[in-house]
Image (cartoon, rainbow, N blue to C red):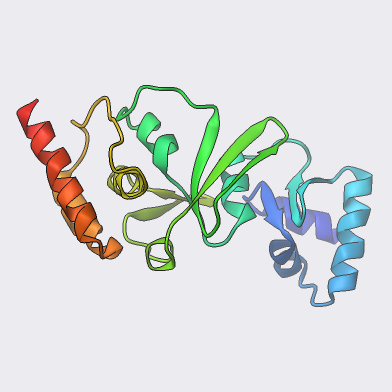
Length: 191
């Protein structure tokens, strides 16, 4: 096996952008990079998922793919809320905070990208790195959701840490969102 493949498989990542491959392979010439990726796609070592995005073979992490399509981006909204038990409605879509609104289907995976203003999207408050992708904390996903959808219905607000929400809400610089958060908190307190 050649050295470039060894470098690729030493990485814990399953999804790579052209920039990732250039860094791993220490390749500064874009034409050489294009030729190398085309060669490895043809050999079946790399799988082209979408323009400029590749996977090692055919197995890859869908959440890693979701956050590789646009930079910056992170997993949020219904994906995080469902996993935390805040909503019960199942979605076969991965929801992502991103610089542009768009829906995509890549292979068997569906992605919904929702636009957040840059000051929110670029803030790391309430966003953690989970291996090879960024994901919102429960509270950040909750705030992202009510920021874009003021009257969203939640099945279970018990897991939410309201004090963390009160800290994170500051990054949105939005008084209507602060009032909305207070309304949901009062609603929770009554239940």
